[in-house]
Amino acid sequence: MDEKTTVSGEVTTKERILNVAIDLFAVKGFDAVSLREIADAAGVRKATLYYYFNTKDEILEKILEYVLEIWDQSKIGKWSDSDDAEAQILSMGLDGFMAMASGVSGSWLEDPRMEKIMRISFIELYHNDQIKNFMLAFFGDGPRFFESSFAIMMKHKLIKPADPKVLTDEYMSFYMMALVDHFLLRYGSTRNSFIEDYGSRIEEHNEYFKNTVRP
Image 1 (spheres, one colour):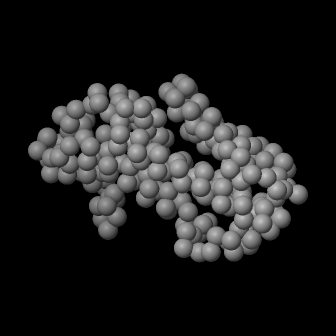
Image 2 (cartoon, rainbow, N blue to C red):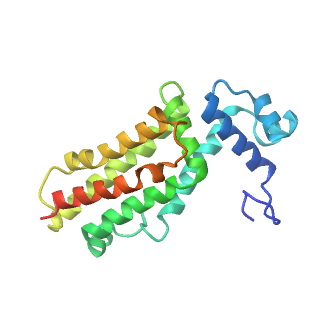
Image 3 (cartoon, rainbow, N blue to C red):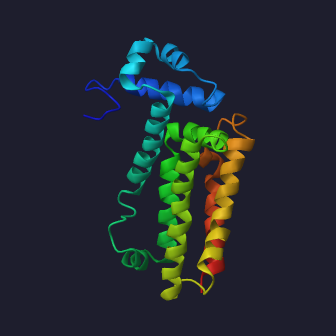
């Protein structure tokens, strides 16, 4: 049975607590929210909350696990870490690879809870070690993935020769600017999701990038 729902499709108590915690953390920040406030907002007794989570850190840990769970689900059918990366890239070509990469990121961010979790991560990053270490590991994987992928594409002359690290920095700088703009600078001032705000601009960025690196 899916942990998120009962057989009848109702949200479980544990999932309701997590949903409420995400909402409160995204609005008030992690430190400003108490376990009592989470319990009250979830409509459960504090003793019930303690049955599932002893501390706010445990709640946050479960939220971060959810990020990885959705990320893995978004890769299904698009990219497999167990397959040979070089063979996958050669079978996709430049256009297919870039479509796959943006598709994985897009489907991950389309999850309604991910918008709020990203907001929590950005506003808590500078003083919450649990989030900082998670973000360093999670976002550190992206540059390494693209750097190795671009090196493979250069090897097979799918793109122009260049420094893979510099190429990665150029490609990813747009996304970092977009994330900061949406989740920090303009968060709460737009009703649109990240994909709604940046979907067409991401497509333009990818087309420009492909035309720039194509031999």
